[in-house]
Image (cartoon, rainbow, N blue to C red; front, side, top):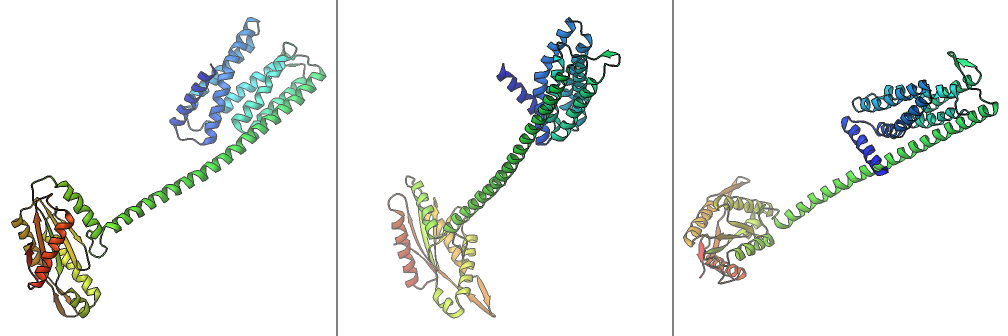
Length: 386
């Protein structure tokens, strides 16, 4: 039964929270209201019916009206934002019920003892200050009642002086305890919220740091794979990708070509114009290569002025056509430096094989040997191995 009650309470609170954006204080207030309603509703109905059977019709009416107000208040609270007036109407109903029971006393004055519930209800619903005001109203009315013999033609129960003194002392004590409990609850709630806010900030910073580290990691991976000058694959990344491509075509019958190209007389360009100009020459050659080869051809810088190309599933004649176009593009490109046009040429070594007859390292060596043959035989040409 207790678990079902807690589940119902949780459902009510979630439904209220989903209906409109509210503060944590408002959620807590609503939670307290639901608890008091779940405890007070059956209690007042049973108490009211018992008094009805004993002839106390007015108490039955008070209990019925208060119980109806509690239930109606729950429905209203779920559909409005400014709920303070709802709680205050319910508090007025409670105050009226409690004061009537103080007036009539009944059962040796025991009905007046129900007023002890009011400070707890008011402090938990309205907070310490307003809760104290509501509790004080009941205390003042009780003291006033003790001094009267009748109110509105209703005879006041004859309380003994000792009962009156004990009632006042215990009521004040109950009020102070209720105020202290609410103050402590609110104090620790604020502390918890402050800690939660700090944790949320730290969590946000942590997420930001993680994203920053991920970004740095991606940048480091990119830097480790990309040649910083030309923006193409560096030596390590090129041969790693080439090995994967080689393994992929190991069981195919399609030819695979490896080409190595080198800038002719590049040292002379650096010596005459300086290394920054030499860097610009490499960048221009890279652009020529990218514009001349196909999108699926693999291209990388494997040395200072040395580049490599891997052609897959391409016949020898088609590969030679691509390389010839590349060589002519470089040859016809020039750049101006201090009023002087700088041109350059490239030499290319090419080796074609059908996998897996040889390893990638072996075909690279043979393409490199073809490159040296192109250098020795006059440069600005394409040589095949053998």
